[in-house]
Image (tube, one colour):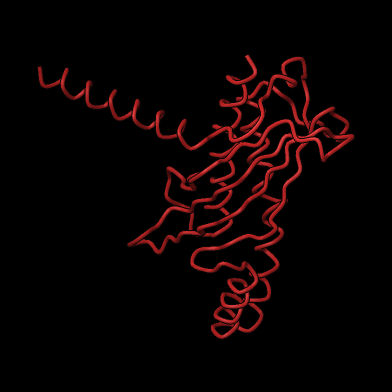
Length: 200
């Protein structure tokens, strides 16, 4: 009897987790009907008007962190600022694309010649932290626009992706980029599932 109750609780927790993830993706405009016959899609990523943690302006966050690191070790802050930007193309976007392709059944065109383009607009980041004895998961929010590649002003659909979580099971996510990369993996996975369902 105890085992049955334990299993029931575990199943309920999984169901709540799935439900919670589903609720983070929301269609706010249009529909994905035009994509039903498509096998490929382009992807673009933008980071304009980005808030980070308590900072409404990303540049203020970068200045603060860079100064803090440079005071501890000259040059460390400058390298951190470079990594903050380069991690987008090196870590975040590949993670997103990998999981998105697996779940959506759409492949991302390497030649950028697909009929439609998915523009992933990150609007906020919470980098989180991991200091061995305490941790806070990273989170990101974004707005997704599906547009015609030849005519980007023609928006097919707009979707919000809220509270994409960044965490690793091993707990070895001491670097900011690693935590945030997992947010993009999470977003790609659940956005892919959402779009596949919407395209049926």
